[in-house]
Image 1 (cartoon, rainbow, N blue to C red):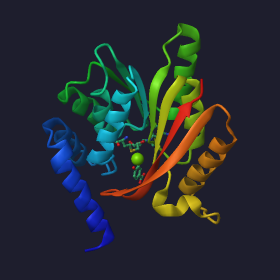
Image 2: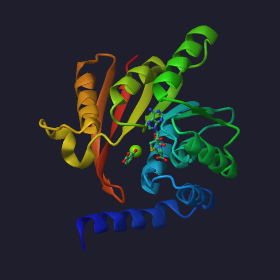
Image 3: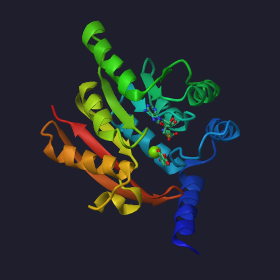
Image 4: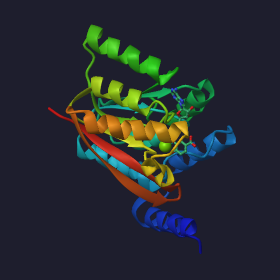
Length: 227
Ligand code: SAH
Ligand code: DHB
Ligand code: MG
């Protein structure tokens, strides 16, 4: 058995025991595949991790950058208490349409707003709304869009967050390439610049955790905005 197969089997083992099947999450993945979206949503154990973290900090306002078909969105939205709200940002109109259908089917369409456009623009608009309309800051941000812009998304995420907020960033290890000083892939350069930026910022405290599983070898960064 290859290592990757074993990682997948452990994800299945964990999912069978600790997660179980959920018709709406299954339908979100099936609907995404049917519409031709790439199979790059978080895994079920990762989705549940996001949900547990959101629940653990009592998140009432969640921001996601990179919706795809809304699979991670459903996991996170289900952690919201009554009256909680989520905003998720997506570049591709087609992805947003698939996501809205998946979110509605899962019963979270009312508490999630899908905004379409380049996330640099939609996040800048959210920063303006926060300043002008005194909109509430976010308690949790999940960054999972294009990797080149991770440093910029993180900077905007801090501006949109309350002190103590948790910012989670996906795909920051990339098969270990993050530690390759000779990297030229712009996505790897993005996650490397992200770590340099974190190292130089006194306003956040962060760590990166490597992960293996059905999505291969990658990792999450977890950062808390200092008070
Ligand atoms: N969070 C999702 C997966 C997101 S995949 C899940 O786990 O279920 C990354 C998504 O980011 C894709 O849908 C892609 O279209 C979107 N994306 C890429 N570049 C973007 C940009 N500049 N602004 C907003 N979204 C972008
Ligand atoms: C890709 C994007 C992701 O967010 C992910 O988790 C895995 C792969 C990609 O663009 O290939
Ligand atoms: Mg990802």
